[in-house]
Amino acid sequence: MASLRVPEVTAPIQDSERLRKAFEGFGTDEEAVISVLGHRNANQRKKIRETYQQLYNESLIDRLHSELSGDFRNAVILWTTDPPERDAKLANAALKGWRIGIKELQVLVEIACASSPNHLMAVRQAYCSLFDCSLEEYIVSNVHKPLSKLLVGLVSSYRYDKEVVDPEAAMLEAARLNEAINKKQLDHDDIVWILSTRNVFQLRATFAYYKQLYGNTLEQDIKNCGKGDFKSLLNVIVCCIDCPEKHFAKVVKDSIWGLGTDEDSLTRAFVTRAEIDLSKVEVEYAAMYKSSLEDDTSGDTSGDYRRFLMTLLGK
Image 1 (tube, one colour):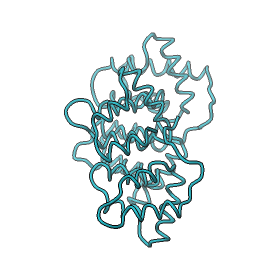
Image 2 (cartoon, rainbow, N blue to C red):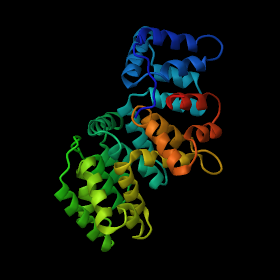
Image 3 (cartoon, rainbow, N blue to C red):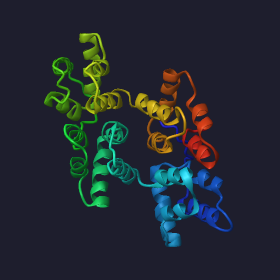
Image 4 (tube, helix red, strand yellow):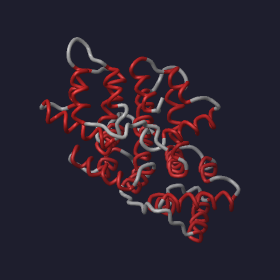
């Protein structure tokens, strides 16, 4: 369930004029920027970008970059960018670091497993357009095997998006997963194929049969297979497929837990889920951590950045 609060009728010309006025004079009216962009869905934001360009012959994204600063700027620009382009850039940034670990690779898993099949296709097209290579090519070039094999399978998949489940297949594939896990062959072709091709409803049925047949959840048995990045990535995949709001609740908690704040991860969770299931993430967060996502985020952020995140949360 989306948390974003959007008025029924908006005029992109008026929104563009309000933003232009917010940029004029000495300083920037950040509250006006939040008031407009923080209450517009992806379709409306696209129309604002196009109208702003037509009216003032300049890019709204470029103007936001010059007018705003810090984490607030990063969050607003990420939010205002077209979602497929946004996720393509997030994927590219995740693969560019000197060390690519699970924290970085989970960004790709989120795009592949917690988004619609059509959105994933649009992200892949945007990636080719922005970076002159395919997302799959870039993964192979920057991620070692067997992690790259698993990730390529995920991002190149086009899952059926209707709620169709074959109980017999779910039971058989639960057995195949268990067999591979018992042999400690987490990179077995069966595991990669099942997780990267089946629709999410079919996979959730498989996960349910797994627990029913073998006593433990699939995640628990994967954890019992030892240590390593492949094991950790598999559990991120299972969680993103089975309960994406649980995954993003953990992303938020990890970003604000301990000394300092991981603003990039916190921003990603709010921006990418506000139009999908951020309200469910909030409920899951309360169940998992016996605490309020709103209070914990507010306590770890400040100023315009905090106000913007709270706006996306619907507060």
